[in-house]
Image 1 (cartoon, helix red, strand yellow):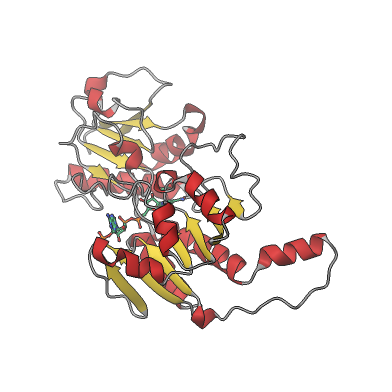
Image 2 (cartoon, helix red, strand yellow):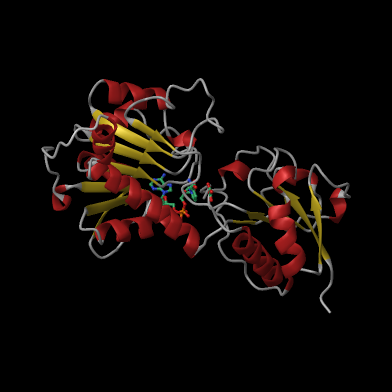
Length: 315
Ligand code: NDP
Ligand code: OXD
């Protein structure tokens, strides 16, 4: 029989059932408490599972052994100045998540490339208009900022649609048919050749506000921006100014500095900006729970954990 252990679930209380039900099914030897809903003894908590735990929460659990993120991005943990740095943080890495992200990026790339918004407008105006300047796929250069778990799949899928794809990362990558740019020294050359720029970086001190006016000026005229990483990567006012000046042709945004995006945000109604409510990938809670339950089993068996975040790098 396995020894019982205790898990604290740090998610909005109204959503907790999405995870408590599969936890009860997959880990009957785990006592689960929902932060904000249940009374619990902080000293009794062995493991934590959450997305954006409230600052100070994890540091208040003296016997915490491992924290598991429900997301691939862990900025919601590491922005806590009191995150207990001796506790390993395991992030969510999953094929299905990468596939959903790739679908979203391919879809919005194609909507832009095939000028679908223009045809939507023609339909609205009941206009039969075929004469729009054609865009050649082989001539369209896509640049992906961040070529990690998700960026790699996005690059491969877009390459398979015959686009000219490049990625930017810290270390050089070797992906068939995808050009690699590495490090700050190669960022400008990467931006200069990116007609569609897709951001898939983790949010860290180094990448915050990387999508700013200086970056946009280094993109070719009429470039298009897709941000699916974090709102903190983008200076929203700079994006609007770069579009309104005619330098950028538009943008698709899934993530925002403030979420939910306030009704007063000009992004909602900008004619050249598509807004989606942080839904580029919606993971199955059962898969997220299985991931954490497997991690807990590895930890209890004394095996090395997988997908542990490098706390010094921030991702
Ligand atoms: P990974 O950690 O696997 O990849 C991160 C990539 O960014 C790596 O290629 C890394 O380079 C690169 N990178 C990090 N810092 C720098 C830097 N300073 N300069 C250059 N390159 C850098 O992350 P994932 O692919 O799993 O996820 C990426 C992000 O996507 C998440 O952090 C999250 O914010 C976002 N996301 C958004 C979702 C949504 O629904 N909108 C869903 C899931 C994720 P190197 O390889 O050299 O280390
Ligand atoms: C994630 C997200 O980081 O959904 O996984 O944003």
